[in-house]
Image 1 (tube, helix red, strand yellow):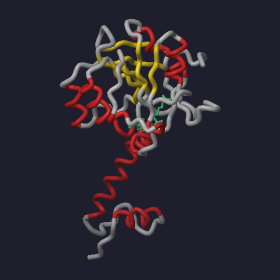
Image 2 (cartoon, helix red, strand yellow):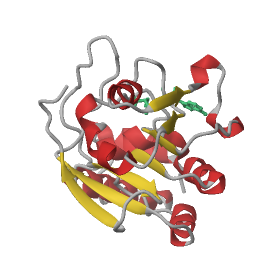
Image 3 (spheres, protein in one colour):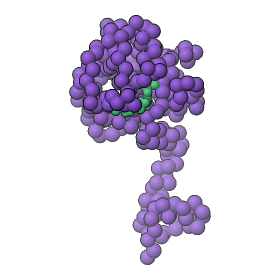
Image 4 (cartoon, protein in one colour):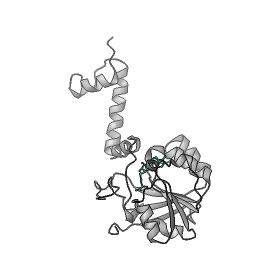
Length: 220
Ligand SMILES: C[S@@+](CC[C@H](N)C(=O)[O-])C[C@H]1O[C@@H](n2cnc3c(N)ncnc32)[C@H](O)[C@@H]1O
């Protein structure tokens, strides 16, 4: 019996060297499973989301219109820590423009969020997507009110995160339309609407466990 790696099988299928029903060996079942799963993801237009989530690329920046909906909930506070933000971040800009005292820190300034505990009233940002579990674990540990703008897809679709949210107090600010992130602060040009919606996951900030707000994309 010939044994092929899954990669080899995929290549062979790609080149039409094997039929979809070829019974080569038991690895073939895995190939069929991945093919089927790929189709399911594609159909739901979620493949891009999965790729963004697992790409390890955290350099997606927030437009101003996505910062405005959180302002009304920050009214009781004065000192806001933005832990994933350079001075050019729109969180820093919008919060300052609205009278908050902003303390911004960022990994590229030698300030690792996981090593810091800054004196503040609340913590607000769009965090790195690649560290979702560690991020919320640390935020709940710090215990300050927070608001994190995140991709809502599969947020609870992982046992560790499911248990973390199950055992901590949090709220959700649901947003529409979708936030178009950009990759360069200079131009602030997005590549179009992403295949996922964003929400603010907050803690001790919203009166209700879930709130809904529309954003005005003309506010830039
Ligand atoms: C999704 S981006 C958002 C940036 C900014 N908050 C915004 O909304 O425009 C997350 C940022 O966090 C930075 N980052 C990643 N790990 C970090 C860490 N451990 N501590 C501080 N910043 C970090 C990344 O370099 C990236 O610039």
